[in-house]
Length: 147
Image (cartoon, rainbow, N blue to C red; front, side, top):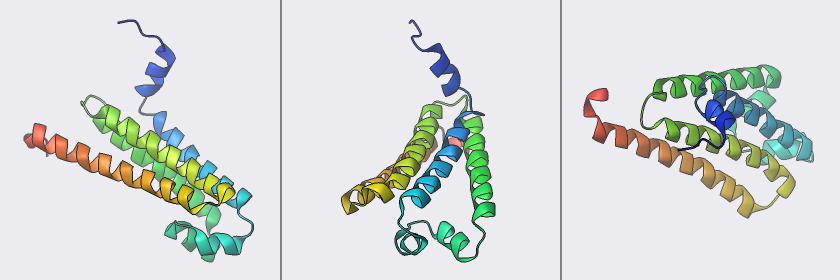
């Protein structure tokens, strides 16, 4: 079988690089939030993230962003590294990319300002959770000695 996109394949198999996509997606999400939201009080009223609201209330937004960026990178790295040679590595990549897309679209919701759009973004995050639970159950069923 001919590989049409060898560079994409090298990115796909790079468990050190892929988590950066998720980490930067979170930064883009919060950039869009602060750029498109009319003011801070609107963010405090309508933001979904309780951790962001806590950071804003306590004036620790910059350390919060650095910790969040680091947490997402380390989490994504550890998950993909552990899944690297498994049959569900692709599901891990899918979840990581779905979470990245959800964050970016979540930030854009401050521009769109439509409840249906916001609910769609919220549903996307729930789909990622369902896929992760399904992959975990699949692993338990197909390889019960792996836990």
